[in-house]
Amino acid sequence: MGNLFGGTAVAATAEAMDFVKTTLRAHKVVVFSKTYCPFASMAKRALQSEGAVFHVVELDQRSDGGEIQAALAEMTGRRTVPNVFLEGKSIGGGDDTVALARAGKLKEMLSALGALK
Image (cartoon, rainbow, N blue to C red; front, side, top):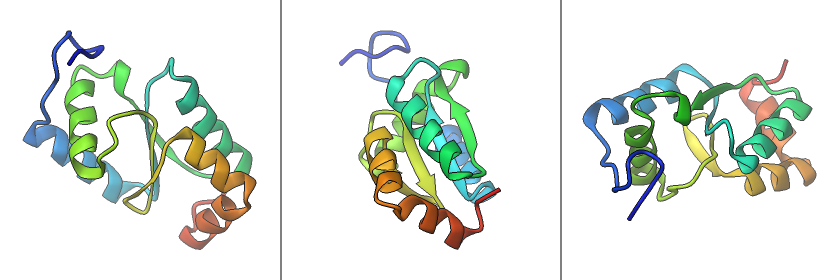
């Protein structure tokens, strides 16, 4: 199985798993993203349009991005980006985030977390 981080599958490391857990504890809303991913851009735009305060981790700009992505896959079963988290729980990717916004649920969820500007 190939990927963008070297051609072979990258394994999650303990450090990557710790980074993910620490990041999720430190921020109410987190988007694990890649700068060039159109689905990640969709998710970030949906959050911005709702007025969310959120933290973004751009995996393609980190030397350990492959390991972090593997840790996310172990934690959530989602290998793809974006992986959007509210209060430490994955709500899915770009399509999922946009669907929640269109249904009016994303703003409610963000408001309940106190994650609106």
